[in-house]
Image (cartoon, rainbow, N blue to C red):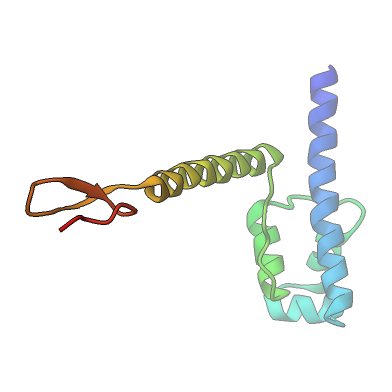
Length: 126
């Protein structure tokens, strides 16, 4: 029973988040719901229903369409995915730092007439 209730709350939170962002964009762009309905080629009652207290069938496609006509992309976020991306960036930075450190310590770059290998920091004796 708790899982079902948590699912319902999660869905309602997502819908409220989309609605809130859309309403803020409408205000910011000084657009009315009628303006948005005309841009989307839908009825004003459809927009009122999507942005109202009891939205029905507010799908990701409909939300993306709504934001497209508000001139903004709808970006979905997942905390775990963000965390995974941060971990990957940290690992890449560590790998790059190790690689740069290895290169700065010295590498075999040349040999002289006596077949003596040298590093980038060590001058070749003539």
